[in-house]
Length: 412
View 1 (cartoon, rainbow, N blue to C red):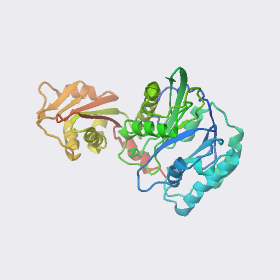
View 2: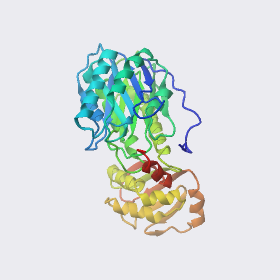
View 3: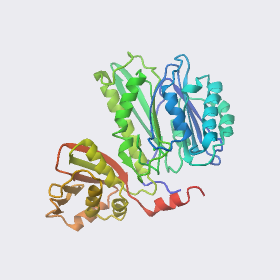
View 4: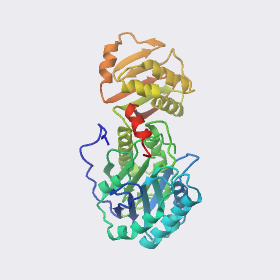
């Protein structure tokens, strides 16, 4: 497999997060001699927030985890998250539901947790029954090998068509107490989250209530994981979980708007942006990373719709793959979005170059300027609608023939 040109030289150094340990295992679900199963365990009292796909075809693990998120949990018991790659356990009927239930029950026996509160996530091929016996056999060995320092191996265990492991870390202060935030994610194709085959797991030792965690996670998801698109396809398995072990020695935080959480929230946003950008930079076949900044829309929601219409357009994305500054395709995408826009007020730029304004080609713009800019691997599309104060930034990648190659052979 060709590695993305944006792949980092190394996985970031991610120190342990107090209150968590983990293990990986090669269970043989789909991949030969490759770790494909991950368990993350949080100490008793761990709080978990989650955001899931809004696809009307969710996988059994998503259905299970939605319930588990709201299930009462004994604060004297640990919490576990069980993730497998290679099989999404989606559209597998009653057998898929039974596989999720059995996984949770085995986790209960092995890790002494409440099965109803076990969080599950799966990623991989849709429509093939999950051989849950392989997970059942693997978990006892995983308990024996739990360690607090295994973030890179964990990131690799959840990969499918990803070409590199994705991780991000940050520290923050809550009062006088330093807390850590570690996150891993997977995703490369079927990426247009709507809450993705996108999974993200973030752990912190901060002492924050579940309700506050949920409010913060949901708000930041709109600005990060829901602001990216590779191919406009929303996965049946998209899951983002934020777990707090509450091991940090500061007062429990229950108000998500408390100013004492400002530094923590800035650090969490940094981690979530870092992970979401890494997913786009590993977009299947990607050679360009593209920021789409829309300003002047009638509302932020309108700006988001316009930005995603541009980011999801095959014509825009293929033009960028061919290094063609074809602003006409951007105009097309704005027009098809259905949002208010007036050609006489619209302007479009590529990086520092103003391409079009007030319904026509901008004076002073030359094709040579556009062609030179398009050779960069990091690009900015800037659109000013000129109608209001709404703004939004989305991120996408180009669409190359390599995307077709990967997805034409996905199940073979």
